[in-house]
Amino acid sequence: MSGDSADTDTYALKSGDLPKISAPQIAYQPPMPRSYRPRIGLIGTGGISDSHLDAYRSAGWDVVAFWNRSQDKARQKAAKFYPTAKVHQDLDDLLTDGSIDVVDITLPTEVRAPVVRAAILAGKHVLSQKPFVSDLSTGEELVRLAEQQGVYLAVNQNGRWAPHMAWIREACRAGIIGDVLSIHAAVHWNHGWTAGTPFDEIEDLILYDFGIHWFDFLASLVGNRAQSVFATAAKARGQANKVPLMAQAQIRLDGGQASLVFDGGVPRGALDTTYVSGTGGSILSQGPDLGAQSVTLTTAKGIARPTLTGTWFNDGFRGAMGELLCAIEDDREPSNSARDNLNSLALAFAAIHSRQSGQETAVGHARNLHAAPA
Image 1: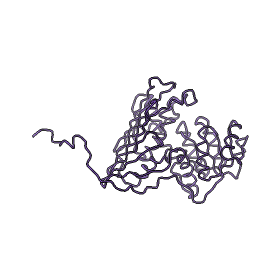
Image 2: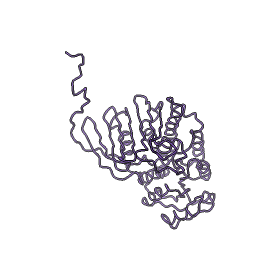
Image 3: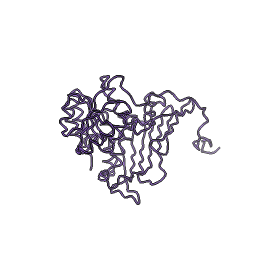
């Protein structure tokens, strides 16, 4: 007998034949409040606000006020989406308007925190653009302030309601694949459109501004099981950007592992894959881009392929605001709360610190960093 006792099928990692089964019913669509219809103010009318406003308009929510440093841009945005809304010249006028219940703050991270603070002090519920803050101490201070003022503070982690990410998350939370063992996500695409834009000034553009969606997805699946991160970044040959467009992170989990791969310098052949394994099965999602994904669930019962509807843009934005509105209506903390988002940011900051130091970084250490590295 050979000393190698593994049979050919086992050694070759072949999968057994499984029957096709019906996909379980998973509530993954963006949440909608039952009857709560607040008056919403939008602060910041940059390019991403189109996705916010299109999502809110399709949901039937009422945006009644706009403010932007450039009034002309604010007027143009209001005319396009909400022609009867008021365009404020002074931000304080919008914040002191007692008829406005919720504000959506889409300003860039580096100037957003003081505006979030002012909105909280004005008694407004707040949806903040992501990344929420550039250092955890500021984030923790804003979380405490919101709790003291009795308002809800949520973060626009719109990727949570991308159909495939939402389905995977809710399936895992329902225990359909048992305890999560591993998470491996890889995105191959062309992020070179950011060359020559303000994004090109963000040294960790991929790990921070872009990657926060995946660190947030990871945190939503494993909670506080993430222990440490080892991350690297590299410039792609021929890229026009000043900052690296490629990055990757390996994450140690309590009882598992995870990896995130970001190939942002790929000019052709975009591909997005997500694989989550558990003690009772696995879920694979893959497609040519973030908007077109096919999901496969494999358990001992068989293989299921749910039919998903919707797209990340702009259903993800409807989900982020919808979850905040539902939380206000039900008087509970939103699942995308700022407090919860600090866990996602701690992962991202650990990755950035690891990339800079060349060393594996404990997630707990990242909580003690007073500023996200520039």
